[in-house]
Image 1: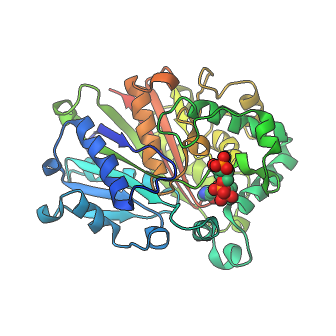
Image 2 (image 1 turned 180 degrees about the vertical axis):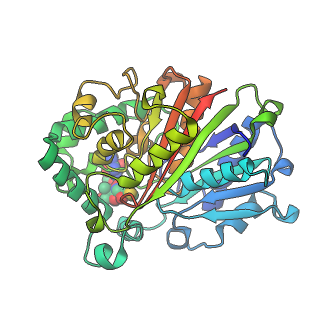
Amino acid sequence: MRKVAVIGVGCTPFGEKWETSFRNLFVDAGARALEDAAISGEQIDELFVGNMSAGRFVDQEHIGALIADYAGLATKHVPSTRVEAACSSGGLAFRQAVTAVASGNADIVVAAGVEKMTDVGTGATVDTLAGAADREWEGFPGATFPGLYAMIARDYMHRFGLTREQLAMVAVKNHRNGARNPNAQFQKEISIDTVMQSSLVADPLRLFDCSPITDGAAAVIVAPLERAREFTDTPIQVLSSAQASDTIALHDRRDISTLDATVAAANRAFQLARLERKDIDMVEVHDCFTIAEICAIEDLGFCSKGEAGRLTEEGYTALDGTLPVNPSGGLKACGHPVGATGIKQVYEIVMQLRGEASGRQVDGEIGMTHNVGGTGATVVCSILGVV
Ligand code: COA
């Protein structure tokens, strides 16, 4: 297998983009990535596009072809594939692109993610998202994503003594980071009181424990490492990209507060990269709800079960902490356009490793991404490093 590097990245600002169409969100992110890699569209061999549910959000299917067309690549007949794995669609598109280059099937490959969620109302969005869980056993009886993660939070708080305040501290930290990210949906710091006094969504989760509903797109371009310096002075090597799956329904899990697919994908990613947990300098985790970040830090192996709340309280995961978690602001503050999130995570780690993350820059040479589909039925973990 060939070694692979990221040679260009692009990301749109995240938020409610009522003035921009689905396709133009992608075109914007793609153009930024091409400009960053200083290449033209003509040089692209293949595209993988992460998208969860354009059919329900904007009434558009056949996303691979649409994206190739609006990227100006239709008449060149470039292969373009939509990748769907709910909220981990972006992370999986990245893994597919890396595999295409590693295998020698293609040289210059775009991995993108796009979602436009705000063209329908909140009820319709929440219902569409519920399709990422088990519709028959969870969705139809009324379990929404906030509801499912609320069950995880209740179980975890009961077993490990996590306090409501510690949960709020995850949101406070991520809003502090998001306030330093010009692409973030929420660029405003909040206090613990803001979280505690926000409206209850699904007990114990409040509004500020939830990631928001977001429009946005991101794109990264990968190439063989041996060719990377033709395009950029700062290639970032993909040290590994691993995927794991689990039962789609929460009630079928061995333990609802441990995402076994995170454990499996992380173990595989570390094994492939021949690295240990202590080698990671920063990590973008899938904090779709505050409890999800707590579980992720533990399931990725950065601490034992039950410790992540205390570590968050002690500042271990802050921008200036031992292991900065979600320097971008995470899904909580940066926003969560579901199909785009996994690519935005790679974008953030690349910006950090290049030293281009300005107000939220952290030190380090190796970063990790963790992208979750549903309540953990699909997980993708990737590790990237400075060459
Ligand atoms: N965090 C902080 N503020 C939020 C927010 C969030 N998650 N969601 C909305 N807001 C703010 C809005 O900016 C708005 O503020 P303003 O009045 O100052 O403009 C206000 O709250 C009301 O926004 P609105 O769009 O009416 O909220 P909503 O009630 O439609 O949606 C949730 C709130 C929690 C239901 C929605 O964000 C949600 O479902 N989030 C979870 C998404 C999800 O499940 N993703 C998949 C995870 S796997």
